[in-house]
Amino acid sequence: MSDTQTLESAQTETSEALVARLAKAGRAAQVVLARMTTPQKAAALLAAADALRAAEPAILEANAQDMVAGAARGLSGAMLDRLKLDAGRLAGIADAVAAVAGLPDPVGEVISQDERPNGLVLARVRVPVGLIGIIYESRPNVTADAAALCIGSGNAALLRGGSEAVHSNRAIHAAMVKGLVSAGVSEAAVQLLPTQDRAAVGAMLTAAGLIDMIVPRGGKSLVQRVQDDARVPVLAHLDGICHTYVHSAADPDMALSIAVNAKMRRTGICGSMETLLLDAAFPGSVAVVQALLDKGCELRGDARARALDPRILPASEADWDTEYLDAILSVAVVDGAEAAIDHIARHSSHHTDAIITADAAAAEEFLQRVDSAIVMVNASTQFADGGEFGLGAEIGIATGRLHARGPVALEGLTTYKWQVRGTGQVRP
Image 1: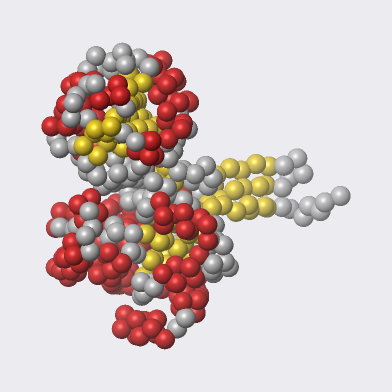
Image 2 (image 1 turned 135 degrees about the vertical axis):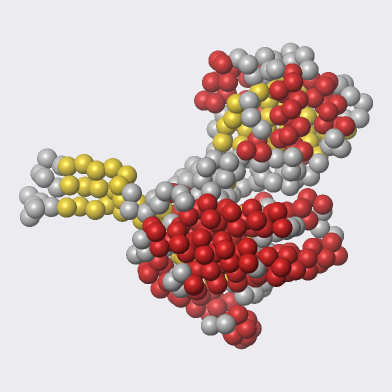
């Protein structure tokens, strides 16, 4: 069905009927996709990456429409940065799709195998999840990342992007599908919901039996709605309230460099540091906060932090639980590692938290005790990214404790089944 026919059909169907129709088509495509070999899937992803590169003028033109509309709607600078595409970013998106083609294929991997005393051989083998619904907001790169990861793991995808990036998403999706189809993948393997009606999101969330898993990627309100309303299993990506704790034994130059990078490299990504914890015994705190302020970062601190520099504004209680996604940072002075770990336990979203220290024992204690999906030592939280972890693209950072945690890539989009091989055994 052409894009025009799909849009016309979407205007005459109920949201439930639309989602059911697309989901059934996606499920049928996934059955075929699951049987494709690793080289076949890799060839399809490389074709999709080439199609993205070839479609650069159309994609950037579509993105320009979204940027104009976003500015008119009053989107923040951080939101506009998330939305913006240029030749370099688009090349990065295409390269990420191509990178997925070169990753180890988890499908068919034997996780474990054992022979029982009765001679039965039991194996746990990785298989695709099925049809995955991805609901996301203003990042157009998610359209390509999600499609690539689903294809690479043998899953079909039903995508629902945010209205802020509607033109960009459609242009990226069209290019991806063109490339995939040229390599023998059904166009129904990656579908973009052709409506921005919020009722369609509700229809996806209640499509139990048709959609096998929902992955929300966006702000706290989106994720909360998905978790509250879903009748389909959810792999949650919550907000990134990421902490960096500068220990008393931190190297001052390293602490300054990491703190500035963790906040200011890109303020609008989920791995951006939102709270800086400075040990009361760390000698370089003044230099760190001055460097951040001089870079244009607004600091909001407790009383002891504010004593470090008069430009630091008072922090409210809500600041410790806020994902700013902007050049704003909460700062607190703490009395040792125990107080830092306690602060993180109370306020972290369990996304990414880091310690800067030259004390190996303090580093190991932090790694063991901080219960986050990603825990770092002497590194910027901006490394919280599937590509930086060698996973290619990512579908999000899962902050829960079940199924998958941290950057979710190919392996995180699989489940497993038991294969039992016998020689005629019957149970007594």
